[in-house]
Length: 214
Image 1 (tube, rainbow, N blue to C red):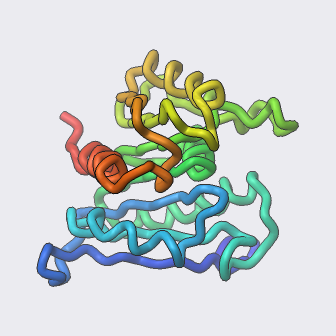
Image 2 (cartoon, rainbow, N blue to C red):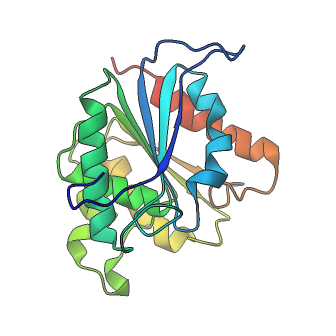
């Protein structure tokens, strides 16, 4: 339930081992979905994340799926600030994975100073302002000065958000110490042309999130 009394619906994929036996979670991974994604359809893709010892949380944005409220980007950002604050009070390790629009949402949350350990921003637009949104919510404007605990992924053959819409974010993040990867055979997340490429992408995400910062 959000502070303005809107119910957001989603799932928790509880931490478990390869035999399906519940394990004590090391922390959480919060997923922020892309614009056309629904939690109902996406939760089945996150088993490997929970098998790494994390409780995985996935929500429908307000106005999507079974979540209440109207679709507004600023409201999405506020909702995720609240979700992260709540989860941070329950877990020791705080991990974020934003997909497309979700990467933009999490970039803005990070820009407000939210506490997190590591984050992956996968195929997020660099800017919304060319489409009439305020410059203050452009993901590239919300990168921290020290981005060493962030991985930025882009896809060279992404037809949903082509390189001219994503490369600035990757380049600025790299200049601030982020890990960056531009997959020559990566399309948009969960739209890669075969299972091998998709699996490579998911492995890259969880390996970065699960790594410890020295």
